[in-house]
Length: 123
Ligand code: FES
Image (cartoon, rainbow, N blue to C red; front, top):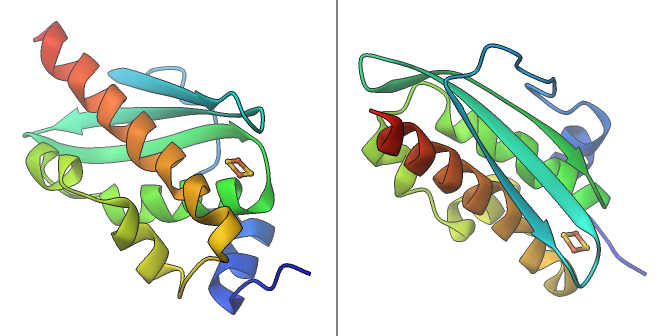
C-alpha cells in the first residue's frame, strides 16, 4: 500500500494554480512514457520573474501533487531561481514521496524548465 504525506494529499485533493492559461508567454510539456502521465505548464513573465504559473496534468495523484507544488515554489521567482528548482525541493516541500513515486517529481521540474527555455529562446 502506498502511504502519502498530508501535504501530498492536500495538493492532490486541492491542487493550486491548476488551469489552462490561454494567454501564457510560454509553456512546456513533458510526458512519462512508462506510466502515461502528461503535464503542460504555462508561465507568464514580468520583469524576469514568473508572475503567473499554471498547468494541466493528466496522471497519478503524485504527479498532480508535484505539479501543484512546482507551481507554488516557482511563482514569484526569477527565471534563474526557477530553473534551479530541483526534484528534491519538490519532494521536500511535500514532506516526502513514497519511493515508487519519486519519479513523478520529475514532471513538474522538467515542464517548468521547458517553458522557461522556450520563453528565453523567443526573446
Ligand atoms: S506514476 Fe509516473 S508520473 Fe506518477
